[in-house]
Image (cartoon, rainbow, N blue to C red; front, side, top):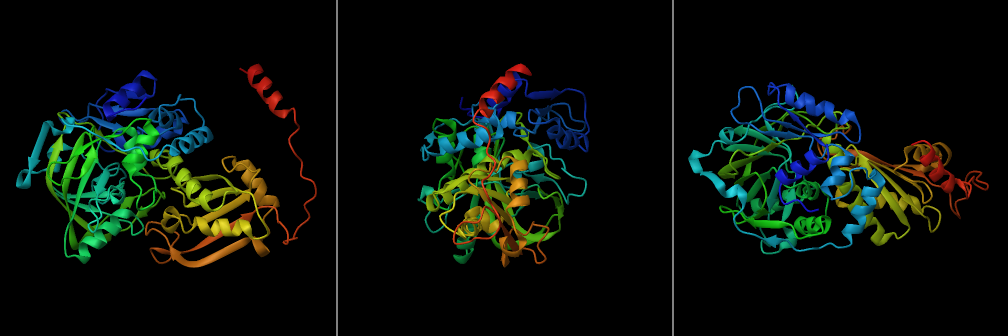
Length: 472
């Protein structure tokens, strides 16, 4: 089933027992984010949380942990909530084969019910803003989809971008946005600033669940996120034109904020408790001027807690990081079998691959580091044989234990790019990266003593099925 807005998805979660409505009065801080911090610890079927009785706010409605479990992620893709992790990644790959599916343009967007412009804009009147972690430097929007276009080719829909970036609220119509240099919006901003211009953007909150997934997907520069959304939904993604900027925005959003990133203007932003499980410090970031806010009556503010994994962001960024990496590697190395990039935003990537010859696995690892995701995130790549399941960590640890020889299988590459938030970088934005070759040496590499490997007995799968029935 394709959901056109957040509200229909929350209803579906409710019907599936995946939404907890918290009706008791709660404090905005720390109750709401502490609950969202705790929710993923309930396991792979953790529910979304809905608050509508928040002390100090009139009529506030806040949704948390909407994508914060494999059950919820499966329902977002229209799959049974019991669908396993590996199966969801495999289904994501199958649907990628339908990409691209052009979006469907619609009128009468529900977010057009109310609007304020210019000096009348006050974001605090529209959103019940709360801090996520007690060391945050301010209020953040952390689950918004940010839409921009390439200033040098604005009519090319492939070069428009939808991305998720941390956004600090600095004033009633002023925001700070972090455009990671490897992300498409940073390229758009650079081109606008080279022309001496501001960059128009639209920021949408409370989106349908697939829009949030594609906005967090590391696609190639000329690939359109709405067209991927159509493939994942099995139906065209509904979009409409934002009234102030003319940018294509999701039809079903709760709130649409329009304005510009002001060219060549930077101000201190942060600190912020990040997906790395550490606080980032204060840095000079871009400044956004809000020119218009449009919103549904009584909008639902969708927020996302992030900190020490696993939290909602780790579920949101899991399958959609694995799959584009798999697709990009598979084009050049058909031997690649699977990619697991689920851990801490893909700072660690595990790849299983066949080998053409000795040294081949190391080449696959180096290619990971030059993908759109790898340029900014992948810091460690582990390569395993094709018969090792990268989603099965005991198998991966077995490969590391028995295949990897530090004398020749650890490749350190110095001074490569990484996002500035990576805490291991001695210089923000620059780090050494590591490839671990945990594959069986192939000729002419004759290292080690690998005789006939022990294989599962042919009858093991049949017995696994029998035992599952017996233990129910």
